[in-house]
Amino acid sequence: MTATPLTEQQLDEITAKVAELRERLDRKNPWPSDNESYFVAEGWTNGTRNALDKLHVESLVAEVRRLRTVLAAEERSHGDTIDDRDQAHEIADKLAYAVAPEGVIGEHSSMNCPWTNALDLITPKAEVDKLRAELAAVHAFLDEQDRAARLFELPTPAWVEAVRAASAAPAAPPTASHGPAGDRDGETGTEDAAGREGDSGTAGFETEISVRGRTA
Image (cartoon, rainbow, N blue to C red; front, side, top):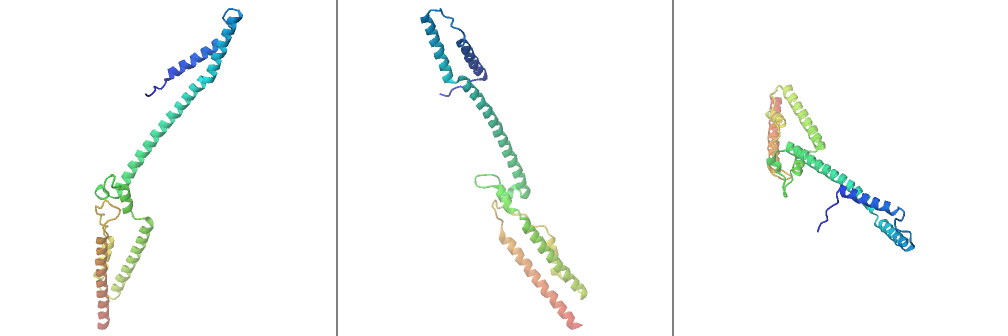
C-alpha cells in the first residue's frame, strides 16, 4: 500500500500542533499544589518533552520540505534535459536529410540510423582540399595541352575537351543503400572508362604532332 504524501497544509498543521504542545509543556503546573499531583504532572511533562525531542518532528518537517524543493528542481532539470534532447534530435535530422534524402539514408529504426548513414556520405575537408588540388593540377595540365596544340596550329584534342567537361559535370547523387557505403563498382567503371578515353586521346594527339613534324 502506497502512502499518500502529506500536503503543505498538513505539514503546517503538524508544526503548529508541536509548537502548541511545547508551549503548554513550558507553562507552570496547573494541578493542585499537593506533592502527589505535582510529581504526576511533572513526570508527564518531562516524558512528553523527551518524546518530542526524540521524534525530531520539527527537523523531519523541515527535511521533508527541503527534499521537496530538491525534487522540484530535479524535475525541472529533467524536463530541460528532455527538451535539449528533442532539439538535438531535430537538428541532427535536419543535418542528415540535408546531406541526402530519406530514400538514400532511410528512417530511424532499430536496424538503421540515418545520422550514421549521412555521416558516411560526407567527404572530410582534408580529402576535399586534396581533391581540389588534384583537380587544379589536372586543369593546369589541360591548359598546357591546349597551348601546345595552338602552338602547332592544331585543334584542341577531343580528350582535352572531354576531360574538361567531365570535371565540370556535377557528381551523380548517391544511390539508395541505407548503409554506410554506396556502390563503388560503378564509380570505378566510370574512372576506368575516362582513363581509357584519356589514353586514346593522348595517343591521337601525339601521333598528330609527330605526323605534322614529319610533313614539315
